[in-house]
Image (cartoon, rainbow, N blue to C red):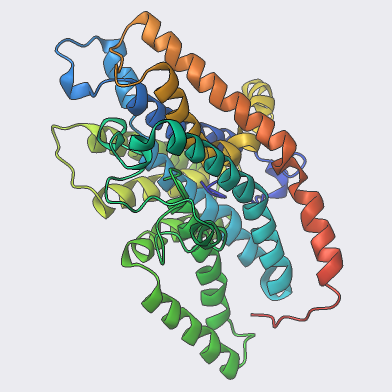
Length: 399
């Protein structure tokens, strides 16, 4: 999801970074990607919870933990605001548009283009052997995938629209890859935030401030209201970065972390409990975003010398590394696995079905790891070469 989706620019306090990484944020990023994948996988191969007559504590915990995909995307947004928004704020007067644009686009495209090609291959396979899937006949059962409204397409025009982050704005997402909606959100937040910083900066001339403000207004008229409505969630991450840089006593930071953690857990329980009948939309998204932003203030300078932290650092780093590839590629693969091995005979909770779920999830992680090895791990090299190629010959105004 995203730098989010997905953590694209590490930017936290130097005392908390080991080789430009923050173990706690790596763990959050990796687990959030797994949560999104787990929800889509459970929806594809298991019957709905409402159809179960008898459930155990294990069943209830399983369905709860695999129902947090959308909330995990909100966490991605906040984390992206913290990292990317923080990187913009930390540059100050040294911010330059060209390195920023190259950093963002190289990070996004190195994974996005292979993900679109993977979607093309799987959807061509569906089109040949199971055309009812791309026509939307399975969407009601899977709760995802192509809709029956005829909007599915794998044409060149749709491909290019998704390459340039126009999905949900000018066109639907590409093929069966529904999670691409959040990538468009991320990209345009990357554009809006530095424009807003530039428009309010004392370093910008009046003419440049007016130009930046005009661009913001035009974008707000053009971008969908639903996309703009989630921008405050992303901004909470940038605000958390700014607050985390203030001289807050260690005890206060620990209390902030505990408060945010408790608020987040409480929000998730209320949101997912049918007793409370929480409405969908911002009423659910804003509390999750706010709670996690509060957590980030405490996490940003959490001590890294505890043995448990050192033990989890390697696992967290590996999960974080593949999180973006996992997020962008998992759904077409899940639909393919479900169609081949499960079909319409969705499973009920049992030891065997849970084992099958874990096996399918492991396959997703394995494929994401392969994609990371083939493409994503080369992001820094590609970014450096692009900067070397263009940085000296192009001059972009400072904000």
